[in-house]
Length: 417
Image (cartoon, rainbow, N blue to C red; front, side, top):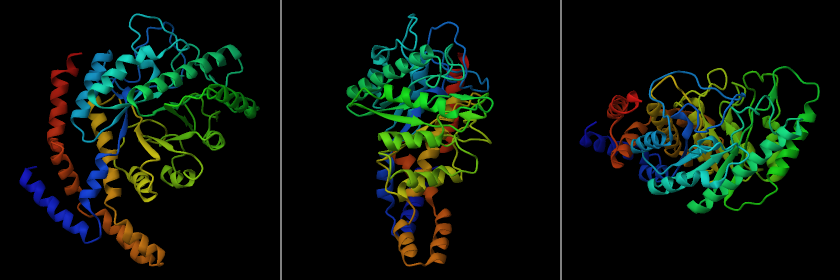
């Protein structure tokens, strides 16, 4: 789009929104300061860089064989830097433990230390991003179907120690970047068929969590993520939403809501205002489930828009954190990154441009038709012109030119791997 056209379209859009009491310039200022925690694992299909042998176990899988996935840390960082060059705003990078700089060392997961992430901390500082972190319980010989809820004390203790060490790494990251590192704990523990002693496993998990969180660490924040079910674990999930919600409320922990980890008809957006009064903060993992937790690239669908709208309407931009969690190996990985990040930004932009003051006035006065009519009118307001202006003022190419640049990067870089 030509600069003159974008400026003219934005001027008209600003006037249209102003008539409804919406300040588009203020909305854009807010949008620039909403970080998206970008997941490192899209660029390499959740492979990581461990040198361990006999890595089996279950818990996760990526599908597709598009050429050019990152094969080492340098390539992964190159891809992330390319992604960041194509999106606006200041963002965060979410690392899994398996992405440490292990070199030729055989470092098992109960031996990992902050030194294995020193390079990541320095690199992140140089490019101006903050780090978040995750423990990694899947894809290991000791994963199986149960980790922190395993009746075998030796296996359970292995994963307790792993998670303790991950918390210390996150704490060191937070100290280094002078900003708390959010560390997410997700385990796949469950059963293929229905168990007869569900409480037994959940009490084991509760005990493990209590041991893990016993050490106070001031520069990190704990997040706990539930799931509905997993492949080969369809009948029972130890860390269900109800279990973790209760644990987070009792222990003042951050709950992670993954948009693919609930029944298809559940609304994650509706959970935000229901949970916020009882937990300190919420972490979101945004993906696009297709009938199950298939981790498709996030798109601007009704649920994504509803989540952003609920956060803004609840004035919760400081207490609800947005992160991405998908891994599509069937398409260009950089393109998947850019689409997902921009989708979240577009959803927040639409929410920030909503004539919320007028809508609240209608609702408070019981003017329900006017509220409905204004909500529908807002859907066709010229938010696209505001988005184009956002890209223009951040010196980014247009959407079509972004596609061309991504494909050029594939031709020149990723296709040669």
